[in-house]
View 1 (spheres, rainbow, N blue to C red):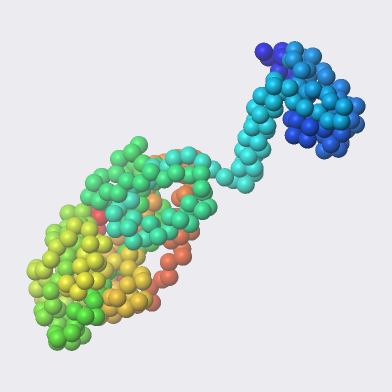
View 2 (cartoon, rainbow, N blue to C red):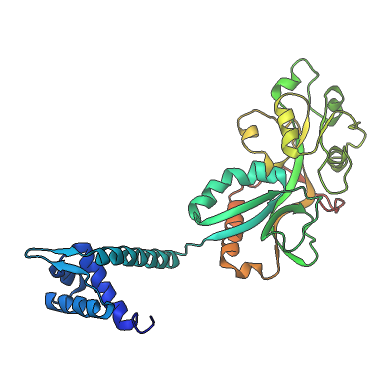
Length: 321
């Protein structure tokens, strides 16, 4: 078989493919920039090599034999596949599966609306996404990229910071109807509170509110009351429903403030000391597919508008999230 399909045979196959497409040696010769006689001679040599006829030479045209028709179909598919792959390689198109682990609220509010842009840029890359809380440890080998909220300490793994996280209270405008004005932290006594119990690893049910009030020097407000949820986006849904005042994360709340569905009664934003980052094993970015998605995530993070509100820095919150 190797002697049958040598370099010369492959050259004749190209001539055959063009001739079969046009069913004309003359038009094939024009496309290949050779003479009609050269095309006819190479087809005859190919037929002799293969041991069967490819064309029936009719008075005014060519017709494929059954063997020629079957071979033309295979050869045409092969050349199309080669051409498509060359086009992909030239344009940097990549394909394959990338395993990504993402904390649930970040996946729901930040990443999911952006995934169509990733799909449009890399249509042949398939993401297999696993949504897990940060309280579940990241283990090398179980993902290619992980989007996590933490203090940046991941022993044995690398992290590329994406953005810092800040927090502040929000509520639906309807919540304040019929209640005293919500102008200062002490006014929270008249309002139900909403809590995200997964604020960071090891935090208690009311830790997020207590951290915020401590940072703005209002630690005497009693926040150990109200509804608790185990996802940030569920807490935000409860706030949108007018159930109480919740702690929002700057990164995960966008249109709700722009449209007025939620309002922020206090100006202060408090830095949590945590940031979202892309976690990956050392050396994994040598895979150009993984590196491409990693760089796309960085690009998307840079689209975020910086907060125009004062931020209270915090250096005490150093637990894992």
